[in-house]
Image 1 (tube, chains in turn green, brown):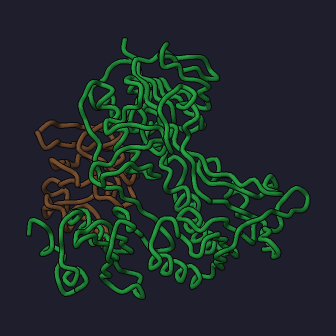
Image 2: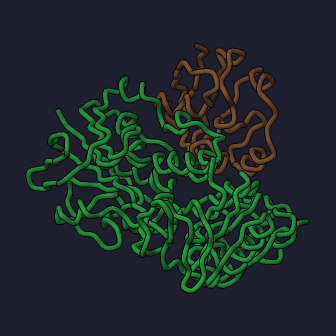
Image 3: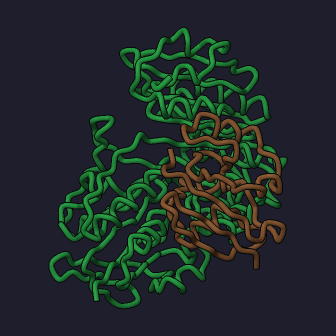
Length: 403
Length: 106
């Protein structure tokens, strides 16, 4: 019987299982996950799960019964130690598995700090449900949270924590928060938003070490100065988990190199999600994304092709971030624009910043403006008059390509 | 346990049970009903779980939120009975509800 093996227990892995069965595959599926939980939604971890608004079982992408009913051989708490592409076997801490086709969906790991004191208690990273369970257990008694890194994860945590009554400091090495991922305009908007809610943001401030008492952190050191903190969350980026692929001799370059069919340099091995470096035919360049929609789409693509299909992946990347009562929806990359157009008023906390290149829409940052986000999806790549886009009197529908 | 009948765009019917409190999106994806992508996992962020609610069932549902309305407004397949299935929670009152699936999610 044909056997599909999936390494990883995240959203790409979960979607691949579902897609294989949905496409009619009735052979054996083995899912090998390092975490102790079935595939779950990761985005709410730094948002509704951290705040306690959503329970753990609600995060599961599909219930346990699904895997039983669909005859999926699930191995949780299991680490893959080697992949042998020639023998087509996967070796794990719980034994080895043969595969006909393999999907690597190993995701990514938070970048770690290695500075004095970084092993003190109270210093956390945020990637898994277990990470957040540990943070929540401490947050109930904590008074002063220091977040190292002013990216989306850090800022989402800041919004939950300051709303829960903690004192919150955010340290950002660069000149502005979100510097790597957005424009000065959006950085300034979120800086002002967070400061208005009581978060203290320290830009151009690196973390040089931690000081503690009784094995627990008490202070974050920034060169000559110190910030008091009894809880620290570090969010300074993630790195794709490519070691298994490298050891197996698969081509890697800032991620596991795949083609638009999610196929690696070995014809029987596919990869999907955060761990891949993949071509984007719409943008005309290769990308490594930290994105759930990408993980889901690549998993669907890989599953179809593992079954002998001919499905290519081509989608405009999109992202979202929830902070306070603000829903930010992003399409494309603002850095691709040579001009920007503002629709709405940032002071009302409801606006969209469109980005154009040679007059064509290439990206949007939409704050509490789902309609603008949806219109950008349809306008992507099309020319539009900037004045019309900026004019709230003009109905967005009239700007659509088909209108 | 209340049940839902999902009807694909090609007419294929799927009658499945759902837990009270689970969204229609979760019930569909947990039962591998094709035609619902649900890329954002139910946060009303992506509009890829668009459905068309059959006949009188629409009146039994809660009001549509401003966000959901905005997400649906520009959908080319939008009908008066369009909803996002992640925003509809199952209950005994909805036992037997009939849901039609659009041909595409955007």
